[in-house]
Image 1 (cartoon, rainbow, N blue to C red):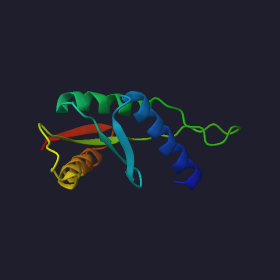
Image 2: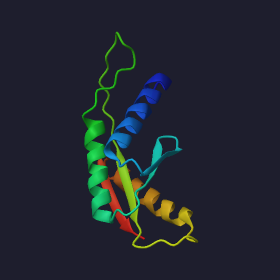
Image 3: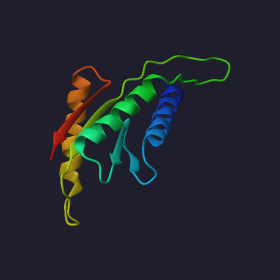
Image 4: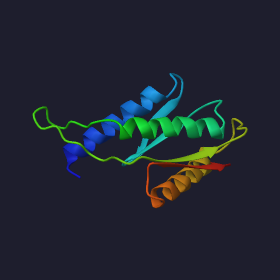
Length: 120
């Protein structure tokens, strides 16, 4: 994917994530084309609904790279969720994020535009 196009896609995806999230959710770019979201107080099923709204929002967005050349791009979003029932202040986040990344990989392998949920 051309760099300008990749940047435009990442920008759109990040905007949709912000629009579909709550003001106090923690959102960041993890690596490459991956984002990480921390949704405090949200259980797995609700996180799944939020992810589905994000996927639908990205799928329904037209991406314009250049003003005079509108371009429609088919962007797939795969979401992996690690739902944690209770977390204490000394909990390591890396294993939780690793579980979410594995779930995301399963969503990608299944064709994308899907959500996979695991309970940690």
